[in-house]
Amino acid sequence: MEDSSWGQKLQVKLSTLSEASSNESLQTLAKWIGFNRKHHDAFCAVLKTALTPGGSASAVSSKQQLNLFKVLSMVLLLEKGNTKKWDRFAELRIAVGESVILPAVEQQPTILDASVKDALPTMLKEWDDANVFGGPTLIHQIRKQLEGQSPPETVGDAVSKEMPIVEAAAPAQVDEAEAKQDTASENPHSSPSLKASVGVEDKETPADQGMIEPEGSKNTVVAADEPTVTYDFESSGTEPKKVAPKDFLEPSRPIATLQIARDLRNDSAVQLSALLSSLPEDIRKVCADAAESEASLVELEDVRARDFAVRTNEALIDMDVAEQIANVRTYRRIVQQIRQARQSLLTLVLQSRCQFGADEAAEAFLNADRAKEELRKRKQILVDAMELEGIDPQDESDTKNATEEIKLAPLSWYNPEGKTNEPDAKRIKAVSSSVT
Image (cartoon, rainbow, N blue to C red; front, side):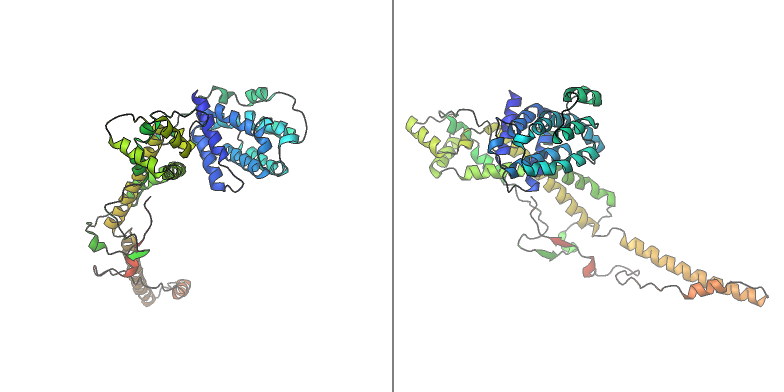
């Protein structure tokens, strides 16, 4: 039952693909499939239906069919550069190749568009180079089907011979950021329940809408209406502190790790906001009154309920409110964590006064220059003493090389005598951007 629900989720996402879908949209869908890879059986069934006769292939344009194969290729190449995560997707890759790609290629004279046939050899080369199936057998089977040759053995036997490890592998666990994946429309085949559905569903609507808009930061570093400002450290009220470069890694890590999860949930939050905004004003008022009342259910007359049902988007009626609220809360938590990490980075920058060792390096440079000059003087004294004693110093080549040395320009920004007013070059340029 759960796999059927995930299959319906994938159907909804596939229905949003169009001929004009960007590579970013295709990559987002591929990552969503990868994040929920433990439901690969349901996903493969939906994808196979979309690409084989009797499914939706007859109604799919050539561009949409090519985009679907691009999504499959992106799924097969997920985490290609990460050895640890690459192994987690092995079972998903085998399932996609055996249950989706090969059956579609077997029916290629009837279902595959010419653009897909032209693109498949390049995709096969990428899959073969990355060894996506753990061996050459499945690639060989697909290539033979493209060339119109019958395979000598079944795909299941070939995969069992090439990939004994994959069959014993357990599905990888999805982390917390991947567990509650976003979707704007749930269970399109279920029948809507009109009685008391408006009260229960929209009971959480005001809070849901509030969660979509992240809270504003109380400690904003720069004004939002100024594109670029020159920041004065002394006016910030942050005490100066020596900050090691490794201290910047801790707040940077959650920004890097949570950014993908945030992007995946952003589309769902935007779609949910658009659906709620499209709700008629009178229905919205009934929902607001129901949210403020103490009663858990709001009874509506049959005529009024039918009128509300006709004028309400079907996606809102079929929506799983609890799951959508959980998705929005997860999205909000991710945004807040990224905001806190960015705030920590800005605080460290203010504490460091943008001093990352430049003064120490300049002082070491000047000390080395002074030591070099001192050695030069001592060498000249030694050469003069040797000449007075009649000893040949044999330093003609050294003297020649010394005269050819390049004089380095002084460091105009560094003042070894003490602290002075910092020049503009040492002030931070803080670019105004939305934290979310």
